[in-house]
Image 1 (tube, helix red, strand yellow):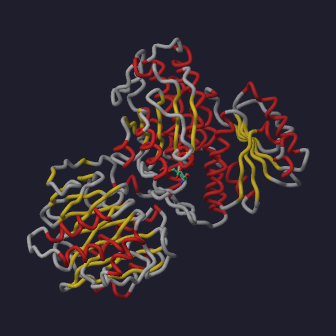
Image 2 (cartoon, rainbow, N blue to C red; image 1 turned 180 degrees about the vertical axis):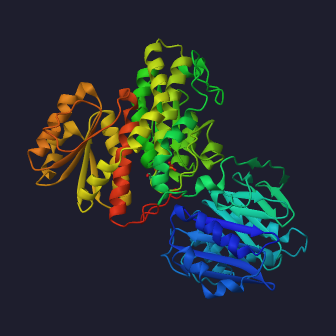
Length: 613
Ligand code: AGP
């Protein structure tokens, strides 16, 4: 996911632009660039590599302008290189553009522009945008005040795909124009300064008064004015929001990595996500969505749709929804769901989970579902994110900004919120589930303190991380919700340590995977369901007898003589066990990656939010 930062105001732009890009590094990128207007001309510096290299480049001191745009690129079309880095200028160097998204019809547009006499210097889809803007500007014979606005508007009407763009023009050196469709963009205001960013943390150091743009919005920005237009270029009013979390909460604090900080923030994130929804001796408070008994009574199936860790959170709550609501639940990977023509109608309810709220596959799946008559609920951690604009209903986890690419506190907060939603549905339906509902409510309230017990006992995890950090294959096994947690534990390990890892249902080992077990292979078992204790421990004994070394994460009485490494977690309702069992395994993944000296917060090839297909 690319990063965009823009500024127009009274200060030198380049330090603000660079600082903003540094705040967006967590999104993953391969190159960075900046453009300002110096003495009436566009001046651009861009390179493959890190923002620091841009900051230390010899030309940065030539940037004295108080207006500029900047970008971190995560390559989609064209390899990481200086030529492909943003900002991109038209071949006449009249306009500069930074872009987040994909222009699906760029080849057609490129051919049109080449025939119109334009030339190109990159392999990117983005480069068609500044050239299109220059084309429309050049053929517009009016010299009205909005020639720049009109040229950008005409250009984006030709674009198919997704975009968030910021545009500079040498013709209007005090103006930045921005527009968005399917990729996020915000504007921050602070007296006579204006800030632009693809994500709020980039500008929180300067302002918390933020406009969150909607699809189709186009905005003309000068130091003292904002003019909002809709997709028909009609002027519109927009209201800003005051962002309550501060820049500090998106800094690392005393932690070496964002990921470790966010693992340790889980008790607070869970407590904040519960918030005031659990009301003693009353039904849960879900006044932020108004789902009626008559509607829910007609629902024949719930689909939970997401990607990666968010999908794993869905797997964790499937049995909870089914037990409490008696409604069948299917959990689907969004990139599959959107193409497999699922059976959707007004009697299905789609719950889409997305921490960032910007995951292209999940948003597309939600749109498909709406188009087929289903109501949709978005579960997101980012206020005003794209998915929240598409969904019929939105519920927010309140985990605070999750910066590390590897999702941790969002996952446990998603399970928490979805458990509460399942309780809410049962209460709306007036189903006779009082005993289990009361038990779950009480146990949810105990989770933060139980999570802290784990977070205060990490030495054994650190030691085991040292033992396995040189392994090439590591397996996670479990039954039922322990398998759901094993799926997430495996993803955590592989995405930050680059060790091949897999998760298996314990009962499935003997149907093939046990062929992989040989001397010294590492198998990590999760056992929190007392009903399955004997079966699960015998599965682990099977792998030990074939030479495997094991670690067991459990809150049951496991035979200490039979298993050398046992990590005990606090007891909890089996439905809520993945919220606790994952914490030592998040820490294990973290310490293995740290032992290997890897970039824990920004793992190779990954982005914090996958806004492209
Ligand atoms: C999780 O650690 C990964 N970073 C990834 O699987 C992530 O969960 C997935 O891309 C979904 O992101 P979202 O929740 O922002 O939609």
